[in-house]
Image 1 (cartoon, rainbow, N blue to C red):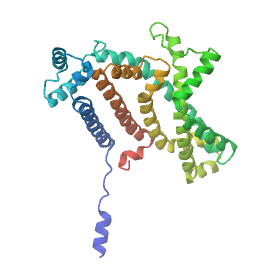
Image 2 (image 1 turned 90 degrees about the vertical axis):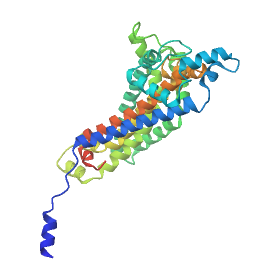
Image 3 (image 1 turned 135 degrees about the vertical axis):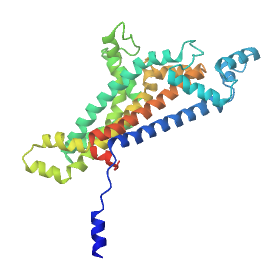
Image 4 (image 1 turned 30 degrees about the horizontal axis):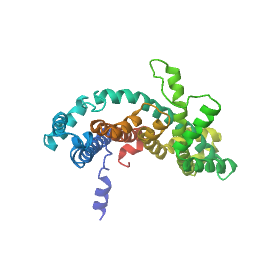
Length: 334
């Protein structure tokens, strides 16, 4: 038995996969998910509803107009050919032409993203600052008045619908105090400061609910890490509670927080639809509303694909950031 035991002991340990393989696996998953999402969107919006030309033109359309639109949209070609043409167009930036606007869909999306993307980024910054500060504050005062107050406030924030809170912000800060406009967007080229100011109330309306959720997640993650032995060791070495929280606890608690932040930013991009409608902002949300009302299926199809791709890309970026936050995850323990 002795030779077998020593032979087993001398067997080399399995090597850990390098970071390149970790990222390659994540990228392969990203590409497959993106293709699957495009196939589902194409099937639902292009095949299942029936004749898209009939949907756009309505029941009173003539046979000649339907035939012309069918040919213009390429609906007379096989589905796989149309799907391949759509994928090739997305790869080259050719997304087709809007029926109602008679404008390239790419130009419409770029124009509207100059409103939606800054709004989502501003809301995410507000969410992160509020949530991290409140979550750390509550965790450092566990079961005390500060902790109970933050948890109660976060519960109210989760329960309040963001569109109702947006209307409340308009009544207080636009109608009563007249500090902000009730809606509209001046444009970045003409009035950049006024445009930035026009996004403040919508960003706050979006950030309140997300910050309430993230604050609770941050508090729970920080409390779990604070029970670890290395935290007690750091305090025994004389470090202050603030130094321990910011230098040691927050970094180790950031993996679940980062997961939620990634999901929230994706939700902010896709969830600006209602808020943009409330504040009359010319973003992606209003564009898709108008496209649905006008039965502009090329715009609807590409907007839905854009939002789905944004969610998938953000999840991929979060997977990559995991390695930065916690290098152990690249070793196959993710």
